[in-house]
Image 1 (tube, rainbow, N blue to C red):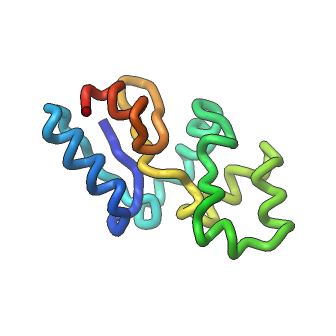
Image 2: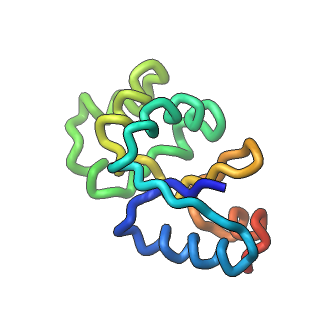
Length: 115
């Protein structure tokens, strides 16, 4: 199980602690620091969809130009946008057993046996 996020993200920290307490052994990957994340982005987009993976509530999103924001609606340009602005990736993003989950909501928690 890998948990992708930001080391400064409180939600990511809570998710890691809860997953660990539930008996999982999550490996944390900081999306800003890990170069290999770039190669994973297209697969994540395919797995969860553009609407799910883009954090449109983030400060990074609000600071983007309209031209850059338009890339979020262009499947060919979205991976490049997320690689250039990795804090736009909604977090935590969890890879486990060949599946991808995004966020730390009730459905994601219950999927991993966390209450």
